[in-house]
Image (cartoon, rainbow, N blue to C red; front, side, top):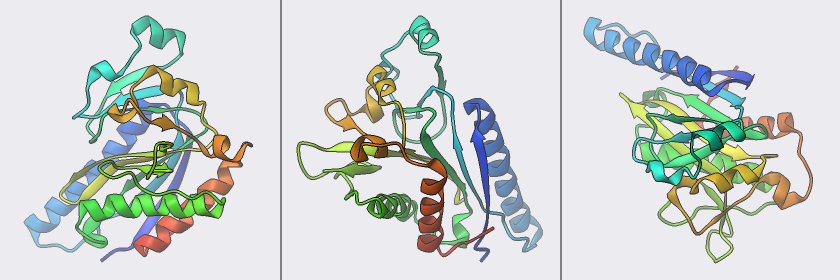
Amino acid sequence: MNKEVKFTDWGLVDYQEAWDRQGQLFDNAIALKIANRTNGTQIETPNNLIFCEHPHVYTLGKSGHPENLLLNEQGLTDKQATYYKINRGGDITYHGPGQLVGYPILDLDNFFTDIHLYLRTLEEAVILTLADYGIGAGRYPGYTGVWIDGDNQKARKICALGVRCSRWVTMHGFALNVNTNLDYFKNIVPCGIDDKAVTSLQRELGFALQMEEVKEKLKHHIAALFGMQIH
């Protein structure tokens, strides 16, 4: 099993460009797995972990409901935001500057072939990162993602997850609100949940954080939980 993972920080990148680049890595990994099976070769499948931020954009998962976007075309223009229907699971979410987006493009045959465990492990990495800042977080029964006060009426979401998996190769991933402008979430029903708030590290702590520091902490926890060797 290949537990080496190439880490890349794409910085602030257009959503469509990032989706295309993800898709190429995803398709290449699947093609290699098919070739191995067809030809009897044992060429190791590469693993990638990508961090980035996006300009203002709303994305709707394949099981989502378009009516959960509360803006029309003019509204999107006024907000300088774009909108995409994409091939991950989940409903609608927002990405924008100040939000840490992670795209693990992994061959889970190198780690464990359990998509639910995969999601829970990503959540755990975020939970541990928040704990580094003194924030207690956890899960909200019946939903993916990471929540604060998930066991009571003050439940608020700080990290969304939505993934695609084919032949145990993953794409898409998670979005952690660090210094995010939360007003943009008012234009959607986030993840199809209309009675829960959204929050960020900045809102919880009362000050803006250094994004590079958050990235390093989260990367460390992901590597430790998956047993990765990141380079």
